[in-house]
Amino acid sequence: MVDAVTTLTTDESGRVVRLLGVIRDATDRRRGEEEMRRVRQWLEYAERIGETGSWAFDLKSRTVWASPEARRIYGMGDRPFTIAEVQQIPLAEYRPALDQAMRNLVERDQPYAVEFKVRRLADGALIDIRSMAKYDRVNGLVIGVLQDVTERKRTEERFQEQSAQLANLSANMPGIMYQLVTRADGSRRFQYVSESARSVLGIDPAAVVADFNVFGRLVHPDDRQEFESRMASFSRNPRPWHWEGRVVVDGRTTWIQSSSTPRALADGATIWDGVVVDITANKQALA
Image 1 (tube, helix red, strand yellow):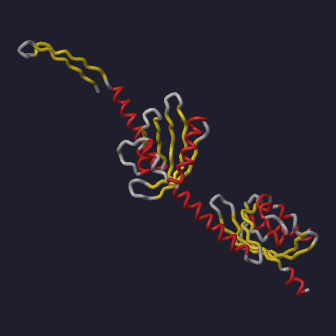
Image 2 (cartoon, rainbow, N blue to C red; image 1 turned 120 degrees about the horizontal axis):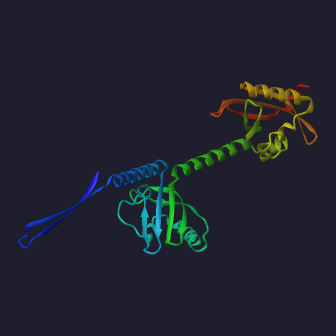
Image 3 (cartoon, rainbow, N blue to C red; image 1 turned 90 degrees about the horizontal axis):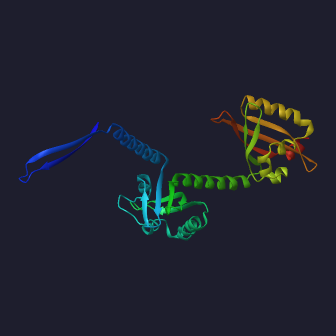
């Protein structure tokens, strides 16, 4: 590949009397330009995959640069935008916090990491955004990224709703609801223990989740070996669990019944969805 530059010299009548030309090998330059085009395409593709766009505020000219993905997320189209115009896109309730975060970044070099909602310009859809930025003080540029986290927010909201429903359900049950995770190597931990553990066993659910042995130490000494042996066996070969035994709570012996059903997890572990009930009254009635 070559670049050619020519210069024509004419006489008074307009006739060409001299032709000068320069031919240069443009192979390296053209390859460099092609490589830059590929890199830009790859970056734009990566931004689309991650639903993450790039942006910059020029504090001197008060203008905005935004990558194609950032423009898509905000629904901005192709026209130029000023900083003032872009700042109108987030919902008004977030404006004070966003302004304060920007001042903290520019004036105090404090981290800029914010979450807010925008009404997308193109279709009016409500979008959840997470944005982070750094300040280039030399050039007067605030350079950042923004990500559409709408789906993540919806998932979190659904999880919170389901957790609240589970908490309400477990609070009205006579026993303890739990989720126990076990592995073939014998390790085990509670992933969830309902609040009723306080009334049934006199223990803090958070403490049991943090340390399985908080529960294990409650098992009556005469039942502990059989309990541990069964736990090891069921961890190696998961199957529906059913165990009756004694626990010692504040010096008082209580009979409990534990039942659960195993589910295999993708990482090879097993999760047990189960319930523990106090059966002391039944045992005393049969005595």
